Amino acid sequence: MQFKTRAHEATYKKTDQMLRQLFGEMVHVVQEAPMFVIPSGTTLTHIIVSPWGEKDATITVRAYVTFGSDLTPDLLHFLLRQNDTMRFGAFGIDADGDIFFEHTIVGSTCDKEELRASVMAVAQTADLYDEQIMQKWGGTRAIDRAK
Figure 1 (cartoon, helix red, strand yellow):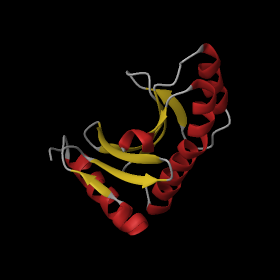
Figure 2: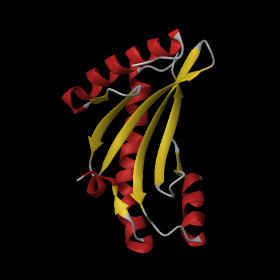
Figure 3: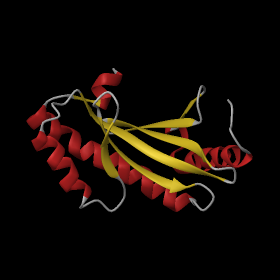
Figure 4: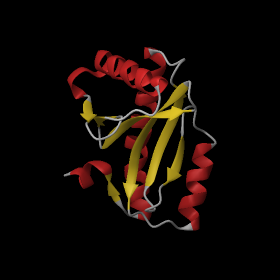
């Protein structure tokens, strides 16, 4: 695996250690990228470590909520209004039009409890909203797509 900076590598190693302490064997390492995956409920939570300048890195926790939902103005308004109520993270839409929920932490200052809170908040939010979005705007849950 290639790291862009020393801080990127150090944050990846720290994240790996914390995730294993928190989630044990549930943590799956992605060999091709500085990323981990943890299954949770009806979603898969991705933890991505990215460089941030030369001296730091970020840890982004992302879970896909639905794939292929009908991105109507009503759904987009719903997601934006929900973002206003979130303590950790926000909904987003990727280049393929798939809905995700994510939260990003500064790598150098992240501790185990902050990482746990981020992973749990993202996973629980995606798990909570996937059924609600599917029922009204269609689409497929992450767990169904992974099968």
